[in-house]
Image (cartoon, rainbow, N blue to C red):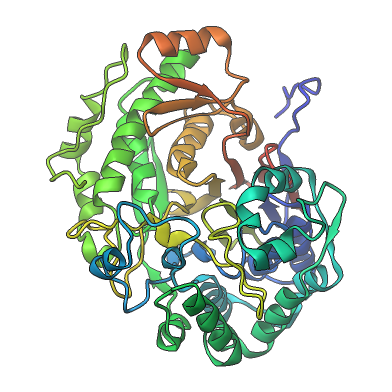
Length: 528
């Protein structure tokens, strides 16, 4: 930290002693910090922050989405909360095929909309670990929704980039394209119906979303689009969020915890275990990026074939993280050339916000909330103001596939919070946003911190790459000679026009908290 280059146009990590919050939006960070200053704990601050971001960053998150969290109470072990929603009871591969779908479920299809799990998760967290009333936690979010919020630069850029997708739904366009186009940075936008929903949830809890008048209106709208949703499906979602055991792996002496399937955190752990066999600290940029791309390719190939609702992929974590499998997969990497991925020995099967908080008591939470694609499904219910996510688009329409759509089934999820512990003590909640990039991003960020000894903000600022779908995406800040070397090894490169992902983290030291918030987004880390 003492050698920070103040001419770099970057920012150093944030330092504090008592408590800290890091989010990707300044109003979310401010709302969470305010709760911490008022005596709320990490869970209270996280709920306040995510409720604000569900208003002010509508492309990335909302109450119509899903949620995962890792919570580490001070002095206790890490626990995981699965707040992902389930498919309607009537949803089957045969039914959707009968309705004319094949291959993939489109983003805007009503069948891409599973019952949203976020509100169930927020209320479960609050009931089990919160201390301040929901009315207080939602106060800022309700105010921004009712009276308007100022659109920030990164949100404005993303909004403009996805203007055409949201224009396809007249109800969504009325809310998000109020002047006929995307708002610009500095413009004020309000969502009064969303304020009403937040007030109802604050007063009545999850029942206000999953039962009664609002649920009936949402089901009616989804049915009008051709959805298979019922009131019973929504009612079952009220208590849908559940605590589960995290999966973990040791990386160079640090225990990395992730949510288990149906999340892709297992892919992050698999990447880490593969690259652990290499001397990354001594590698040049080309070798490091190549290794990361090859390990990512292998891990994602297994993710797409094997990870699904845990009821449909038993013991997959134990198999993939075993020494036998990791050694076999690691041996398939050739440092001189890019190779196609091959599954281990299993049969082949044919946009998001993250935040973290550490409070004055030492409790830590790693929290992620998503509507998947930018603006989710792009489907907005005009009677409730709820914009629905598109997480069901992850399902496969292949009979027998672990991630095939099915009644009351959870899809494979890309959103993954992370937590690092060492010798049983919580060291760092962290997370990376960016859809499919997240597992790769977890591994790259942790390698920067652990292998290269970087500060949190510096590790986030490293130019990013992502090997996915046969293409190696690279940020333009990666040097031309490095790009040329990667192409010589057989990678198909694409220089991206938008930043790859975003991230937040808080590291707990001896009386010091270090926080980072990705400069690719609008947010910040603040402490006290």
